[in-house]
Amino acid sequence: MVVLCQLKELDLSCFGCCGNDYNHKRKLMKDIRKNTWEFNKSKSIKSFMTRTTELKSSGICANAIFKDGNFFCPGHPILNQGRDYRGLDKDCEKEEYDGCKTYILFQKWNKEKQDQFLDFIKSKKLDSFAYSIRMDNDSLLKEFEKKK
Image 1 (cartoon, helix red, strand yellow):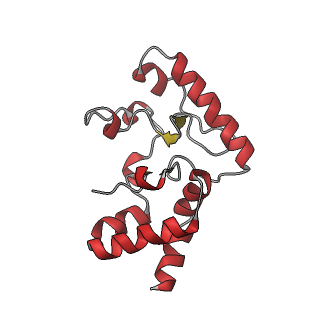
Image 2 (cartoon, helix red, strand yellow):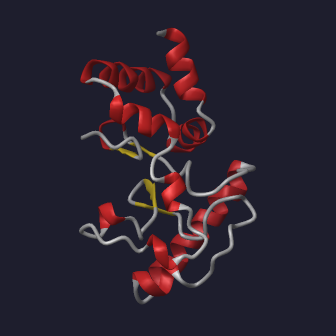
């Protein structure tokens, strides 16, 4: 199963559904670096996930981090043998965001259409920041569907 949030074969990861109203890239990356520093200093996932419930001023969740070249939430069940720590953050809207519109549609497509979408993404030569923003605002999906 291909997970659009972490496209290892394209060296892309996505933070799109981990916040809202994103603003300037530099401010966003500063907040994510601070989150990552706090994660590295925390004693446990629980202590990290419960330290605050506020979105950062850049619009990113206080739990989104950047590690080993990827954006992710350390509380996500994919990283914790199925255990979901995102619920420790009372403001996490994981039910609403357990898959953006593109992710949800992608899972319903046949393999041929999925491969076409992956080729389309690859042709865009995006970095993870641009990929995240374009997944969040559905512009990649709209452009792909327009071509179809």
